[in-house]
Length: 117
Image (cartoon, rainbow, N blue to C red; front, side, top):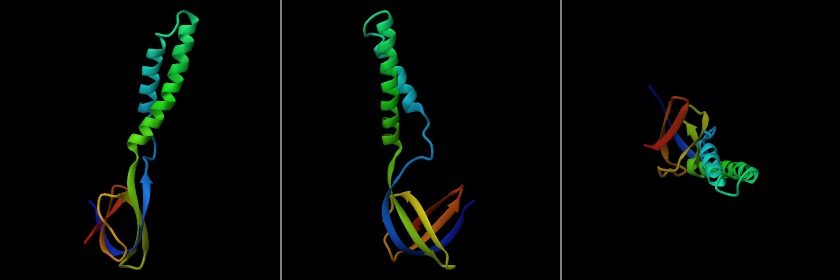
């Protein structure tokens, strides 16, 4: 069940939305693939060193890839609610919202979202 409030947009600015925590999948996949590829370099101890170094670099690269894939363009919307309170919401930039516009705010599940009325 969601609660609904109404208000008027006071300000809008662009923001980047990132997940609260990364899954680690990018690092794990990058490390595994790079270490496997590193096993084809050299032989003996050099092969293991190459796999270890490649795996470490792959983990870092995988982390950057995961971060790039999971970030999204968003907006921060500052709203003066009808009851006089002021609320700030960060949400995806998939709905056009402008200052002065009347909005409906859906609250629920630990998140809020503003949509034009």
